[in-house]
Image (cartoon, rainbow over all chains, first blue to last red; front, side):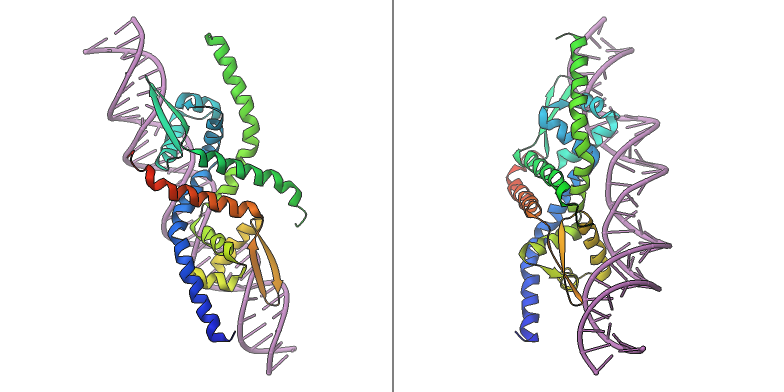
Length: 119
Length: 119
DNA sequence: CCAACATATGAGCATTTACTCATATATAAT
DNA sequence: ATTATATATGAGTAAATGCTCATATGTTGG
């Protein structure tokens, strides 16, 4: 109501938000991994089926090294898992969340076409 | 079966993937906006209720300028919408997808605790 | 009209990052 | 063993990015 209670409310907000902040760095880190064109392409490819580094390199027309570096980032975040078969290492999506996040992202950008009135 | 058909299969993959590539740059751009600590904190704050720039600055303990810059990024991606009230500009989440994406991200990082065996 | 306040934005800078290149490791084939 | 193939990784570099600082725009109150 008065200025004092507003200040107290603000402090409560800060306190509530501290919980969110505990997640925020992990959250932003997670999304930043999705926030790269090469990595998204890799994940979209793995949405169809498991692939080895060689396949992915050919698919994206990029060097093995570049792909391998990005796969390491995806591995470190548990977004992909690996299966070794002879010389090859086959990659697949880590868990259901990955596909869900990708699909909701796709939903968002495809539905956004209608919302371009306000510019 | 033989080497020839494998090559053809590869080309089909590339072709299929071209569709995905149409989305991939938009997708990675979308996620890259979520992939910053400051912006995620702003979005998490807006998950609770609409806030003006002044509020957000206080909440995150950052300058108005820094917040305003990031709000522009969020606005440009239609992740937040604005409502002007006198001098203040109130920000709120753009659509349901934003909250959904945040929540699934939170789900992923909270469930991930159990998966830290393989390191 | 002018001062105070809220927000927006351009330029500059320091950090981060995604690639290339070189090299290392591991498995298979001869 | 040696060579070839598949993948992994460290160092270095060019580009992207998030902040600060200065300034501009817009709104309210005296």
